[in-house]
Each structure stands twice: as C-alpha cells, then as structure tokens.
Image (cartoon, rainbow over all chains, first blue to last red):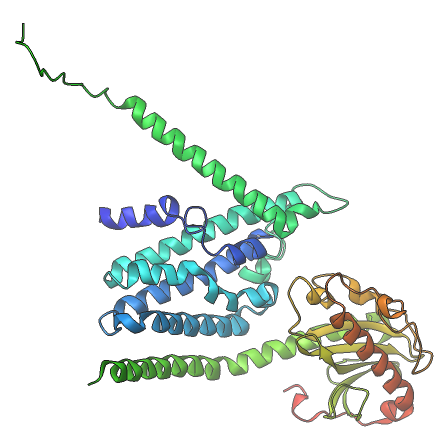
Length: 233
Length: 212
C-alpha cells in the first residue's frame, strides 16, 4: 500500500508532470485562463491518462518492443477522439470553450511519457494509480494557474462554472473586485509563462526548506577518526 | 513467421480495434451531438435578431433559400423569418464564407426590413485559434461591427477590411479570415436585397429541421 502512496506522491508533487517534468505546457498555458477552463481540460487529460495507462498496461504483453511507439500513439489518439466525441455530446458548452485544445491532448507528452516510462513496465493497478495521480497533479497545476490568471486578469473566480457543472452553477462566479480594463498580461500566454515560472519557483523553495528542516533535525553524523599511524594512547 | 510480417499484422490488428472503438463512439454520440448543435444554432438566432424586432418563434418560421453565388454554396440554406404582428420585420439567413483561411466558415446574418444588418454570428469554423478565431463572439466583439451597416451596391468600397480600403478592422496576423467574413455578410445582404419580396412571400417549411 505504501507503494501506491509513494506513487501518488510522485504524481502529485515529486514528479509532477507540469512543474517537474515540464510536459504538456502547450495546453497548460493556452487554456489556464480561468479556473473552470483549467479544471475542464485537466479532467479530460486525467481521463485520457487513466484510460491510456490501463490499456497499455493490459496489453503490454502483446506489444512487441519495435512497434510500441506507434501502438501507444494509436491507443492515445483513439482515446482522445472518443473523449472529444463524448464532450461534444454531453458537455457542449465546455467543448466549445476548450475548442481545439481537446484534440491537442494527443500531443501532451505527459501521456505517452507515462505509457512508455511506467505503464508498459508495470501491472494494471499501479499503472492506473500512476495515470490517475499524474492527471490529478496536472489538473491541480491547471486549477492553480487558472485561479491566479483569472483573479489577476478578470477579478473573478469560477466564471463559467455552468459549462462544467450544469445550470445549477450559473451563479457560482465569485467577483473579487471590479476592473475597468482586464489585466491583459495575466490573460495572455506570456503572462501564463511568467506565472508558471513563479509557481515552479515557489515549489522549489518549499522543497528546499523541507530539505533544510529535515537536515536540521537529523543528529549530526559521528565522524570516526581513523588511526593510520602510531599507537593509540 | 518473419518478425516484420508479424509486427505488420499486429499493427493492423491494433489499428482495426482502435478505429472500431472510435467508430462505435461516433455512432453512439451522433444523435446527441446533432441535437446539441441544433440547439446552439437556434440560440444564435435570438442573438442576431433582437427581441424587440419580432414576436414570433424564429425556429418554426423557417424557409429554404438558395442562390448560385451569393450564399457561399449552391445547396439550399435555411433562413428564419421574423414577424411583428404577422408582418415580416427581419430575416436571419444561414450562409457560408467559402474562402476562410482553413476552409469554409458557417455564419448567420440577421437583416432588417430596410436591409440593415441586425447581427452576425459565426456558427462553425476552423480558423486559427488566437488569430482568426476572433470572429467568434465569445472571443471578441469584432462581429458587432456589422450591426447597423448597409450595402449601397455590389461594389460598395466600404465593405472590405481596412487593408483593402474598407471600414472593417482586420486582425493582426490574420487578414484572410475577416476578409472572408466581410465578403460573406455583404453577399448575404445583396441576396436579401435582390430577393426581398420573394423571401417574405415564401411558405414556411424546411424539411427535417422542423422541430420534432
């Protein structure tokens, strides 16, 4: 069980696809303008990651090494197409909002990266957890970045919630402050890059401080002096 | 068996299964997708013709129109007649801009009785995200520039993007897309001007798009 916990921690923090592996940045930067857009794309990506990791893991005995990349690409592409069709049918508003970035999930290197690095070498349950946790880690970054950009750029949070949660969420929008003009930099990709860099920096600071704290609390290692000459007195 | 042949057969097998799965999903979701797109199309109708201009149901007042040149394709298009007190007040015509950057652009143009445009909405397009997609209302208000405009004659010079001497903004990095839309809107208004009386005399009926 602690293996699965370690796996989860890898996906969520230590090996986070967006903050550490730096994969899937194209959709990350383009679609994280609002919390809901980020959440929507994150959920779609997680679904694909879960499906692709499970499929690759189940089929790994039948995929010869030489043709593994084309097969992975085929599996991922079919999954993404299916997700796109399902979103077109059942989440039409969100589908329109995310537009071309749904089929672009195929190009998210995190997905084929996990298939190659993990799912093709491990059994189904760990692969499923890995896929799920990598997806959740990616989604968390999307939501965090989305929140930052939405608050700085528009002054709102959860705008467009009805696209994801249905008409009941139509008035979930939290207006933090009014703006005469939108803070454009936060809403455009360059701002996303800058804020992303900031988030990575903060994560690294947290990691450094955790390491320093751990070192402080460890007992100083006792240094054995080695006598190489003379007799001990 | 020769390993290359074995791999080839395996690849074919995987391809068939994957394609089969996608086909199955496509077939299962097709009716729901069509219904969602139809609903979206009807929603845009009330955006191109303001409420105060009509008191009828636009969706059920559908007619079929066709033109060899001015509607972007020679097939029949739907148009929706708006009436006030049973007298025609406006019309919303579905039209096509065939020369978009990445293919054809589907749009709806609302036109008042006097030929002035009441609204334009893009229904479907494949233009470049971030560049050409500013023709969408949800991306920018560019499309509102058409409201209240008139077409004086087929060669009216203001009906072009600013780069071509007209009055409509083009987008930085994307001229072809707005040019295509401006031309399509102008042609639709010209079609309306040429067929005004015939359009409003036509009986309602659009085949399978009458709401079930």
